[in-house]
Length: 334
Image 1 (cartoon, rainbow, N blue to C red):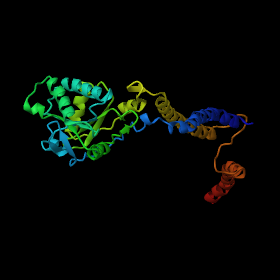
Image 2 (cartoon, one colour):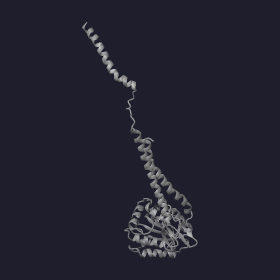
Image 3 (tube, rainbow, N blue to C red):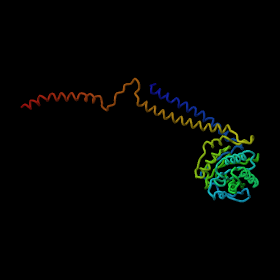
Image 4 (tube, one colour):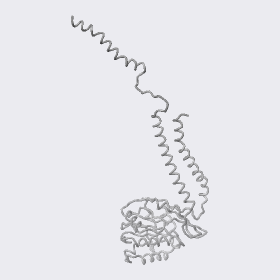
């Protein structure tokens, strides 16, 4: 085998190894697909399909904590951003935690509820009552550090709704939930939706433990009509799912493996692209470099006979000039 062939073979070895690793990673993914299709009912549908830029349905009928029929349009007549929260009031663990974390974060924000933004809470459980909505409003207003003025009270808005209205609002923002007949509870994601003054989804805030700085930035961006897609927080939601046995959200090994598999494939394909680029560069260099042990003649565009003729032509001219010189002188003397 020539040196060039050996070099090409050596350059391909890392690529072959990488392709083998890729096959090893993809094979378990294919085998795991039936497992993913067999997720228990309790953890299916726990997802958010982000619909950044979409408007919430302003005409859907709700009932507020005072028992009055209202629509979402009411909260956007005086344009200001809003935080939309979808919960159900008798949720055993998750929803009370979401509301408590939100209250704590809002207390740390130097913006005022009712003046700078609104909080809109809608229950997606049609069996929830106005009394439950009023109780949650009372907890929010009493615990608010900036006081209990009428303007502030108007900023905390808790509602109940019929199944059609709540599902229409949830669908509009990509919030999926499912009723579990066996337990009588709901399966749902953990996410807040921050809306612009014209009722469009500006961004999503996932998980628990909301930070005042994050809430303030989200509200400021929404007030300017900015549309922001989530990345890091979205991955966190993907890895946590509701466990009805523990009554809370737990880290799911299957989801973590899915995410790790996707990231691994991205890295592998990136590595393959780099190796292909390097191999093409090596081939171009190898094609231009001389092979050891072989003599390479310079390329001049002339044949050997032409080179010899070109080399002897000046001498012939010199001989011809010398032979004519005496005759020319003799003729000059005559």
